[in-house]
Every structure is written in structure tokens, then in C-alpha cells.
Image (tube, rainbow, N blue to C red; front, side, top):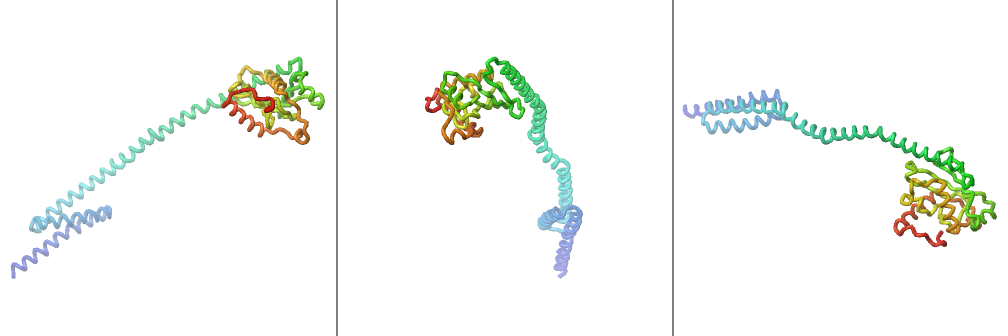
Length: 297
């Protein structure tokens, strides 16, 4: 009986001893993190139970449990402190360095490079405008000095880059010249717009009035001439030379003033002329610039 009471007393002492570390450690972990307290208490329960069963006594189980739990707790705190100080810094610093070097720093270099190039753009555009302006001013002066008054120029809305050109003369032996005399047409009016990179690119040229047939004048007043295309253009060509070539092509293509009722009063449109010119350029680039039959204009 005494032996049984001693065993019961030892069991109660064992239970009390194994509960104290849990309670003590649980109280300590509550001051820290609740989640880590739960995980460590679960581990301590397994460790204290294992220590009691393997040690065979309450003293051995409590001592091993207290030592292991305190060491484990200190180790976890040290590890957590190390992670807080070094771990997160490394994890966040590495992507940050990568983004700064490859992403944000690289982007910064690109932006800085772009910003360093941006100031160069306006001078380039300004230079192109100056070249175009000087060239066109010289062209105007030369046209005004023409003794035969072959052509005359009027600026559209006082823009140096948008001209209305009057073609006053064509071959006097041509049917077109006879049409001009019979219809009291003093001139053939054309519009020329000069791109930003003129004279290195051709102007866009179209007939405004009168409405012409054949003579390589197409829908909308577009003109089928290779020298008006980027492929056939040369910066050496002057407006006067282009207009003389156009006058010759009108006669060669047997151009006539349209006298058909209704159709003769229909005005050419820029939109239609641009679409027609774009289409004919694609066609000629594919099949070559062969002079089309007279019936095709």
C-alpha cells in the first residue's frame, strides 16, 4: 500500500513537474509572439513527454526539458534576431540592387540618355526647317526672275511650305493649249506641299483646276510622275524644273481640259489625290515605271 501511494505521489510530482516548464515557457512566449508560443509549446510537450519516458524519473525529465527548452528558445530568439537584422535585409536588398542595376538604374540610364538626346532633337528639326526655308526662299526668288513668266507662285495662308503654282504656258502646238484658249483658261493651277525634309524628299503635287483628262493626271488630281516619288526624286530638282517636266508630260500624255457636262465642274480633292498617288507608287514599284498607254492617262 505504501509502495502504491509512493508511486501515485511520484506520478503527481511528475505531472506537476512536467506542467511547470510548460506553464513557465508559455507565459514567457506570450510576451513575445502568440504563434511562436504555440509552436514552441507543442514542441516542449513532445520533448518533456519523451524526456520523462526515456529518463524514467521526474528529475531527469524536468532537467532535460528545462535545459532543452531554454536552449531552444534562446536559439530561436537568436535566429529570429539574426533574421530580423540580416535575413530580411539581404532578401530585400538583393532584389533592390537588381532592380536598381538592371531595372530602375538601367531605366534611369536610359532616361538620362534619352533626356540627353532630347535637347538635340529640336536643333535637328530647327536645322531641317532652316534648310527647307532657305531653299524655298531661293526658289521663290528664282521664279520671280523668270523672263518668260512660265509659272507664278502664291503662298497658301502665307505659309512658305504650301504653294499654289500657276502654270501659264504649255506647248503652243498642243491640243491642250488650244483647249485653254477656247475655254479662256489662263493657267493650270497646282498645289505643292513641301515635307519637313525637303529638298531631300519630293513635294506632294496635285492639280487643282481645271479638271484635266489624260496627261498622266489621275483621280483627285494626282500626277503620275516618277520624279515626284522618293525613288525618282533628287535634291537637285527645283520647282521650276519639276513644273517644266509636268508641262511636257501633259502634252506627251495628250492631256485635255474636261468639257463633259457635270464632270467638268467636279473639283479635285486632296484626299482622293493622296490615295491615288499612294496606289500608283505601289503599282510602279512592283511593275516598274513604264509609260502607260495614252488611254490610261
